[in-house]
Image: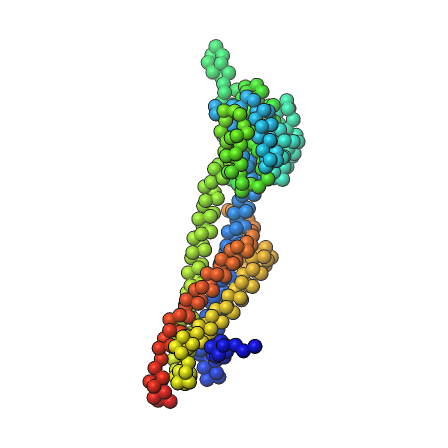
Length: 415
């Protein structure tokens, strides 16, 4: 097959002669710079995706995809509401809940928390509390026995363990001739869970739905119904569609609204890291400018000879574009391979580095996510590849244009 001579000469120029080792060294540095920048960008984006996934998993372990709550905090006909919601083809499960505030007191220690009444069997269908239990069991939340499951930080602050007793003070008081007396009830700690989110571990307690209805004098009413859907990313759309299915005065909200700040913060951080590391790739790509400028200066005699043989300025320009693009393409390939391999094996590489250095990057005492998560998304890889290659091509344009403007007579005067 016959290739255009511009391509053949450009490939030949990529391998500098023995007397031009410095140009080869600069080309190698440019190549490694692009590869390092691309690899860093892929790894950082994968880690940010991993943090986003880990955060979403932990939040949705205790929060529901969609929540239907009564306008005044009470939903009297919750069974009918659950049946109506389940008619939507994308709703998989439902579970009622009672939620209110309470205050715990143990040996003079007082802590406020959110009290959530649940039915353990139905709650398993919409959340993953059972996976977060550190001690005890969720099945011990039996009606009438007044058992309670506390968050790990809440239990630690109250200095209680499984089997201990805690006193719960409900805000709804009992009216007596002496005035309003707070309602107190003794609960037995039957379990401790740890989600890994401070908001829940330090401020959430679970009791049986029947016990919660008695404690908060709600009879057969509940606060609302929690729903699980097929695709959690479609929850906003499904919540809007449920308005046509549910015939009740109630609020419908999805997980993106109740925890929007968490995910917005992670997404902003990911976007900013992408911009910052793209600048690093740009700096590495524009190192090609100096490489090609020196190559053009070194090859002026060759350019003049080619011009006298009939080569057009565009052909001269194409030769150096090929040379620069090849350097960028090789660096890009190295970066993609290195970045993908590192992103897929970061759970092995990071512990090895920590062991070698004797440090722990994400200490459990400080961070709630103590392991560095990673989720490689090929859409990010292709986006990084496109940006890096475009930057490399742009970096070749000015030196190539300079090469096309070389005057043959001036270049050959002192040869």
